[in-house]
Image 1 (cartoon, one colour):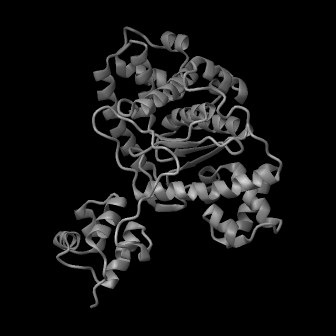
Image 2 (tube, rainbow, N blue to C red; image 1 turned 45 degrees about the horizontal axis):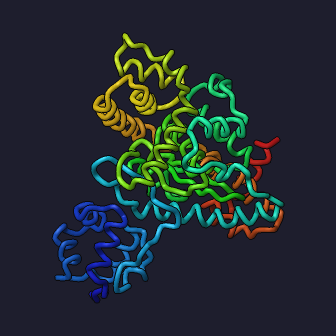
Length: 390
């Protein structure tokens, strides 16, 4: 069979962009590991049929594989992830395609809002990065109309997250929570790679939360990203691993973390809840339940208040991450398709697209592309929206 004239560099780029090891790549292509090594060294070339499968497996356009050199994929927003020690994981093809999907929707939604007479939101960029965290927290709470009753009346972390999202949406923040690329359940997003990002646009301030995380962790990410908006700073974040690295990025991420900590776990209330005679594990469980946050957030807050040591927090973090992964893997699947679409795309966006489609201002084909839906499902989605709004 005819060989595909693909350079070794392009095959390596496609594999690495997809986050695949040579062994995983070989398994997905149903070829021996040695075949991958031969392709990437230039000792052999794939057939056209194999090249088509490479494109499918790595989610790279088929034609792009025939470029002479890998394209430079510049990020449209800054990568602010920082860690102590090893650098953060690469932002893989799944993340990049998810970001592209959101920005595609962003362009349409911003134009829609402008047509509806939207004005810049005064809270976007209200504070400089030198502002005290408690000042930012107070302003966020005032702007959102937040009170402690919002937390106390929530049944659990998932319910609390919904309440906080609704408060943010009421003030014009577009919040998306998605754990896959678009609506492709075969392309999950990794919470180890990133947990969220913010686009601090004055007309359409946007927060994306990685839905693969536990709801209690998403609560923290939401407030962290909202802090980015109040500071007027776009960025990709992984709040729980924010630490060393690029100094300016580290300072910004630590400030956003501090805002989230003070918002969600007020100092005096936290100290009253933490019992010195109890173990760290007991305390983190009690505090996590009380404040409806993750145990990791409770442990980090305790470290900041001098209640535990960093080594204890590190060990707790590793154990908690393993527990999250097990729980997530056991609970994935199912769910209401239309309700899931609302969460993934944000209710205000879904209503805007469906309303435009049903009124004839937007082609059904284009509405389907915006919502990652087949056009024939839009009518039912609209009817459910109308019932839900009634």
